[in-house]
Image 1 (cartoon, protein in one colour):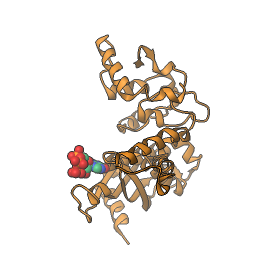
Image 2 (tube, rainbow, N blue to C red):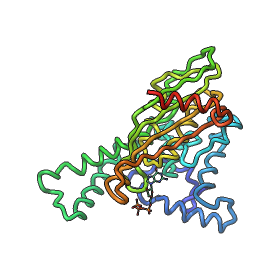
Image 3 (cartoon, rainbow, N blue to C red):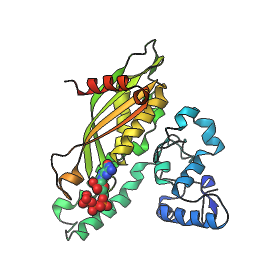
Image 4 (spheres, rainbow, N blue to C red):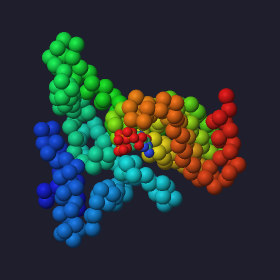
Length: 293
Ligand SMILES: Nc1nc2c(ncn2[C@@H]2O[C@H](COP(=O)(O)OP(=O)(O)OP(=O)(O)O)[C@@H](O)[C@H]2O)c(=O)[nH]1
């Protein structure tokens, strides 16, 4: 069992928010090495996550067939959450943070986040008490919560059962979906457009849900490669198509406003699954549709 200070995390009640910072990823990592010394098989971050994936509860609730399990992406929540906090049964937040607890709402994070921004302003040599900055810590905290609101969304909730039986196997493409995300390395934005294609096998997805899937995974701390794959995996889980293709063209402000300062560079990433990976003609058809005006 994954444990913190000798306690099984999966059995823990939700602690008061004042305790939350004490049970940090670091303490989990420490406990993981302790487990290792005790002969437990858990040997690091990845295996900690995969342990959760193997809980009986996870297996009962998660409907992936064998083929799809090959689509596993690091950072993709693969199990329902284990916390029993009312109203958050479907949240994926825990898995991303490797914590089995959270405050009752994300808004409950605001005071601590605002205090952190106040410290940051002081660190910059600013006076957080001057008029223009008085409400800045709270505003910045709210903005950060918005930028990362995808942690609070689940695929099931977002799809809202908008999956329809339809006798079609023709390609569906929704392209140029605007995307805003946050670079996990610098905490600055990256943005761009996402194009998604899939080949239905008797089921189609409400079109807006493709854009909503983009929101779930882009509104987090991300790298573009993972975001691309997570979107493709989610579409696969939703309608079990014969294949999914996702292309993202992104501009990373960490490369524009700072660092290497290349204002015209774009990053293109793609994930091709199923027939899009196996059949060059299908892939080409998708790419032609994406690049057509
Ligand atoms: N692969 C990938 N890299 C990213 C993404 N977003 C930011 N990065 C890169 O993360 C890297 C972090 O490199 P470091 O050398 O640790 O950080 P740094 O000193 O700020 O690097 P520079 O940006 O080169 O100044 C940089 O090369 C960024 O361009 C992303 O979505 N995918």
